[in-house]
Image 1 (spheres, helix red, strand yellow):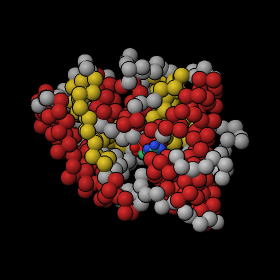
Image 2 (image 1 turned 60 degrees about the horizontal axis):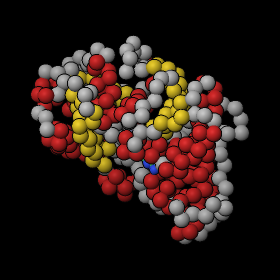
Image 3 (image 1 turned 180 degrees about the vertical axis):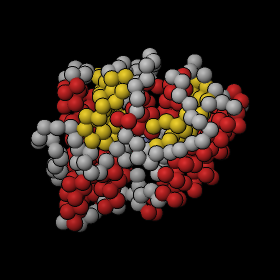
Length: 341
Ligand code: KG4
Ligand code: ZN
């Protein structure tokens, strides 16, 4: 079965083709970073308009690279939420119409479920059950995953998402957008003992997160300094370490609480090298196996949408000939799927 996946929930236009026999045939992404850079964050209306411009050429490109015609597709999957409504509507309209034109089923999928299942695209996929840390620009969630579609939220951020905190801290340090990779790069030249930032909510039980205090701490620290290159690097290092330590502590707490020796880390912040290194080490000590998608499948991509679309299509899910999107959509609302993956 061959499924086209379309992702337009935020600022990346992405398309991919997944073949159930051979895996991902082609995946391409057009990033809108340059478009949003001057504003220091994503401008929803500009994002939607750029998806309109970029999506069809991208779909044509992945079809060409896969060497297949639209008629050889068995279905089309698109991100139906959560995300920016205008951006979501572009992908949903194109995906639904394309499926209608070729007489194949369409399925609207949950963006975070796609992130969560992305490690199953790798050579060494995790078995169920597992605990997942979903860390992106819009979400920071710990989820107990007992099967396909069976998700229990164990903890979530009470305010900013981890990626959002990276983006805001980068902005105040003048490092540009997106902040995660910019902070990680600047931190390479930072000294480890100059600043010590708090590890929010790690000193009390529970699996929730809060990153807004850390952001305020960074702001107050920045105001008290002259922001030269070395200070920016030192602050970037202290900030990254604080976020990473916090995530590591909560992940291991969650695997303990769930009594589960498998941890999946997905979402854009999952591409962070320090997080990957620290988690590997800390998890190994506790006998927990950690699974990451490859970095380009941590951040938004079409492959995870095509793959989840395939899983949902073979489980019998289909959209009517109308479509809808859901800017707000909790993972906990999804229903279990009675099917082996
Ligand atoms: O999953 P994603 O691509 O889009 C959303 O669904 O939000 O995540 C984007 C977020 C941004 O906040 C970005 O700064 C962060 O992921 N990010 C990183 C890294 N790469 C992307 N954060 C820390 N380190 C990275 N290397
Ligand atoms: Zn995402």
